[in-house]
Image 1 (cartoon, rainbow, N blue to C red):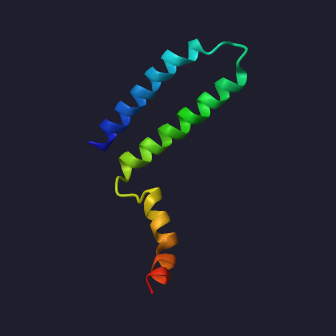
Image 2 (image 1 turned 30 degrees about the horizontal axis):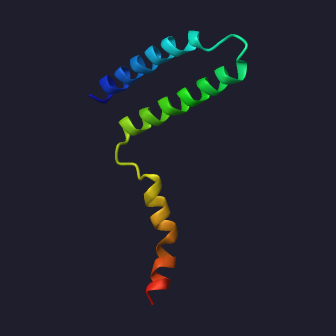
Length: 75
């Protein structure tokens, strides 16, 4: 099941790449690099979340960091 979702995600990413890449002009090399980096990071994040859906999010990290401050302010 997870493999199917991962393959589906890769197909969607490939379609996005094929749709957007020709629209970026040849002279815009920095934009192409940024596009590839963001697309790659998004794809990696999607794969990790498909494989391990119970990973804690950024809000849980912030809660963990500020929990001692909250206890101190309650006193």
